[in-house]
Amino acid sequence: MSVFAFKFTSNTSPPLERANSDGSDTTSSTSLHRRANSDASDTFNSTIFPECAISDAADVFTLTMGHGCVIPLPHSTTTFHIPNYDPGLAFIEEPHSTPVNQLIGTFEYDRENGYDLQWDSWAEMESFVCAEEERKNIELVRKEIWRNKRPNKRWVETHYFVCARQGAGGASKYTKKKPGWTRSVPLKRTRCDCRLTVKTYPGMSVVLGAYQSEHMHMIGQENACFTRLPDAARTEIERGLTLKKLWAMALPPSAALSLQSPTTN
Image (cartoon, rainbow, N blue to C red; front, side, top):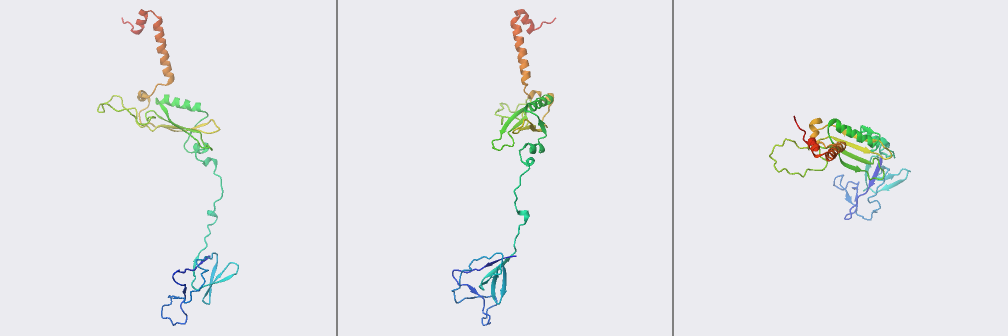
């Protein structure tokens, strides 16, 4: 048990003293008389003696140190018994290293916490996106890219792909001229929750992805009018139109006219 000893004095009044033991004073036993002689030493003012034990013998307070040293204290000294607090080994911070699979943002951590898709390369990830668009007749557009700028990189880039019906360019600036009209074609934006998050990591070509595949709208043929033609389809259509134009230019006018408007019997 640790013991702290204090002595409280006032600048405007001399120290207090115990009541005389001769019984001449009529005040209560708890009252204290002021010492007539104020030449008492103030060396014990606001003094703290930790790790000590207090013994009281013959109206004299003594302070017993750990090595057997006894120091007499004046009668006005007030002692407080405070238990010794030992935090124990549980509160001692020891240096430790966090396992690699518990570092947020690392490849191991992401693979165990939601990134359940894995591709061996970026090209395989793009093939997966194309196959998903063709199978569901949807369009996944890249909304934003986050690049890690920290010197100790746990990941390199994070790419966010969203459904085209969610919108990737912010709020629409189009103002309806006739807002009361009933339109045959509904609005494209439906705040769809479909999202694909793709992350790349330093020193490896493996790519991880987290895919929220649920849509808030119809998919398939009903969604075809809200999708953009793939680049391959656009190239094929443009090639066919170009060949038709060149063929019409090479034929005589009568043959070209027959190609544009076939005759009926």
